[in-house]
Image (cartoon, rainbow, N blue to C red; front, side, top):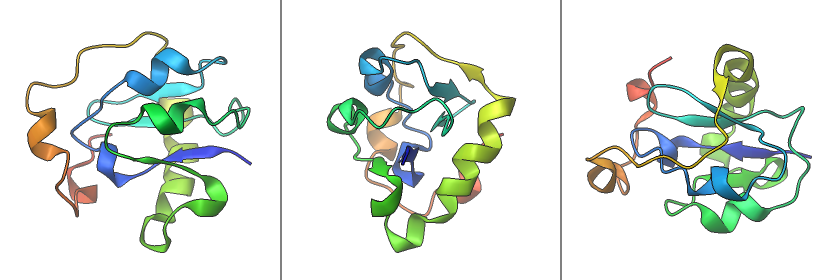
Length: 107
């Protein structure tokens, strides 16, 4: 099983999760992070670090977020690894509680 980054991360892109990942499985896009399903070792460390609760075990992804399982796998080879925490976007807190952000995802 792998962990999956879901919609709450879009336009927030807090990178607290990156700091605790022992295998560097996160990939960074313009306004979203994904987890490489082939690299993730199911350690659960990233889940507690995500301030917007965007990371779920694959089996626990909410029904309305299930498309993010495939999206993480699709974007992983296209985006570069991120191995160090970076500052969040200046407006991340404004986006943290917003929903229906999939259309805002930048590839």
